[in-house]
Length: 149
Image (cartoon, rainbow, N blue to C red):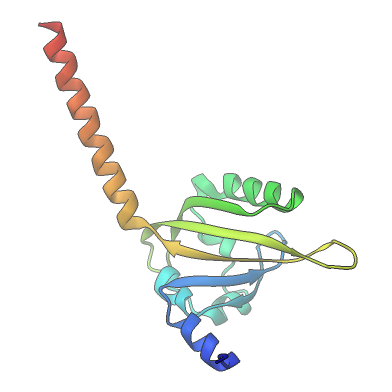
């Protein structure tokens, strides 16, 4: 039994992630953004459509150029991208996100039509990763002290 378009859209909008379709312009102007973007970014889909905010602007400044270059590399080489970077939400909170996407190309001309993908919050996972890294560093320091004596 197939699902109706409205049923699929409802399912997508209930997921705690941002599904997107965007142009490959300077701001990655959004053609579609799922309702999950509010939970992730603090911005409503209409904020992206009305250009009140561009997705590029919410990418952490330290990561913006790297993200831009890696996405463009993937688009130029017609491969998918898998990125991990930080964003700043509407409320100023910094979150780690995983962004997976790919270019959609015209069958006739092979020209890029748009980019599709999804972005999910991985802040908790990154926090655990940083905690483990700190614990490993502490253990390594203790081992070095034991070897010295």
